[in-house]
Image 1 (cartoon, helix red, strand yellow):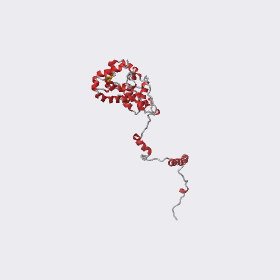
Image 2 (cartoon, one colour):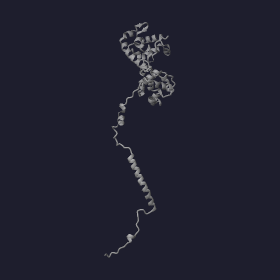
Image 3 (cartoon, one colour):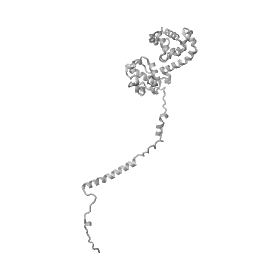
Image 4 (cartoon, one colour):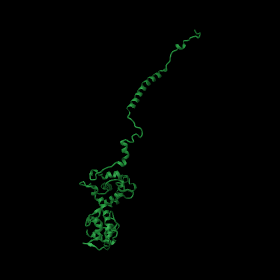
Length: 296
């Protein structure tokens, strides 16, 4: 037996838990509900979430491949013979021309500005179209766009008429013909340049005859047949048709001297001397006098 006295104070003392106040009890009950609920929500989200691929893992997917080759792999086919595939003048303006013409940037005449457009309207539709197709000043060919000549013509008419012009809108090609082949002004302009280039060689070969102004077949100067008939006989590229009094009326006001100066220097689609570089000014004047005589 031990002489150490036994005390029962430790065993008989009241036992105390971690919850000692009513506030702690309330918090314990609340967390007892919240923790399981949050855990269930996180578990459901983890199970139901879509599979997320790691960075770069979709590089060989079909969509990613199409995106990479899009700049060089896409081909757009347009049936230019279908009127429905051609843009209206307003559509072309909004897509290509508005960047400059809507604000008057880079010296471009602002849409609807009658004062800025007035000198240009005086040049006529053919001159405006030619400038739009070939580019002028800070404006590149077609304004940097990729439209048909007919669509560019429509845009020119749209802008010109907004500033007071009275141009008729170019019509869509009929009977399934290609638009490029039925657009009078663009085709005529190109034809005029090609015709002028084609007759230049013939003019140089026939320079002695032309320079002498000698040959006249039935009163028609040889130089007219060699250099001028290609455009003036049919009225190509806005050239006044031989014998057409209505077309020649405004031009007759310039007189023979003024018309000769225009012919020598070139005007619009007509190159200097109609491409007959070897012809003298006197020969050009003789041709002008002949053409004027047909409308008097």
